[in-house]
View (spheres, rainbow, N blue to C red):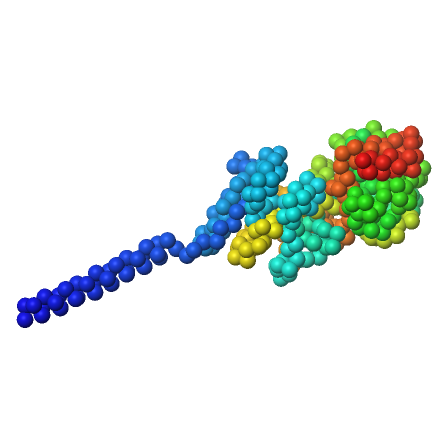
Length: 432
């Protein structure tokens, strides 16, 4: 009996130890949590600015809500970010997710490294308004999810009260603007004010729209840089010649080449001009509350000789977060990254960016604009969500060719050069 009792005791003890060991192993496994998908990311910002603070806050919140995903990021800002992108790509240390764009500064390194990934098959059409995400490649590719709609550079600001006081309304054609010239001159007013002393304003804020209208091609500029079009084609010569016509018609003054950015906004804010040409960002510089409330942000009206893209505005594609080809190659990483992007672009975060002026307008589907936003911010949203967008010249053309074009337009307006001369010079520099 003692031997048999001892055997039973040993057997029970063995089973108990095994069971306890099993429970212990299970406890260790539960403590470790589920296996994580790691998304290597390059974030834009630093600990002292809003972009960086928001990134850290959103990542922390996302990881708590999704313990199976680890956003393993490196965060840098300004030139340090661009330098590190180049260095990491050169070393083969390619992130899965990064802050990127589609132009020469934000997109070219990823393109040259063969790391641009077409997101089109994976964009949630129930969450994003696909009509507000522009094509980023010649075949319609979308390489990143923009934080908002494109950055409009060719806004025609109109002081509605001032225009109405002269007996006019919003112009539907260029000829409607010409008709305002005599009344504006009699009242001591400019028709259109532009900071012509800033060479970039001619290209970014005016010519980018004119060439798209005259050519009928929203991507004329990027195709010219790619060698498909030429900068001395008839479409560009006609577009540059239109500057001379505007001066001769009195719509823009030849003296505008002496006006800088601050003076341009001041002229409009102090009701010295019916219209102002600048980018959407200038809206915040209109300090006169009465003028700001009366300002309409418009696309240029129909231009004589335009062949298409009526009502369009030139706009630089907004930067945002996107997958690299390397990151998208693993379905688990791809899906985790897309889930994070959607979280990062939530309605609440997008609304805050809209209030802060960090974006022009949201790309979220069925986004309701808060009623308490300033009128001029609502104007931005209306324009950004309704107008066709076209290439911005200096998003694709850079260096000496872009400089020649900008200074050349100043020479055309001041009567020192012809459109053909400038077009030929620009094309010769592009070929180098």
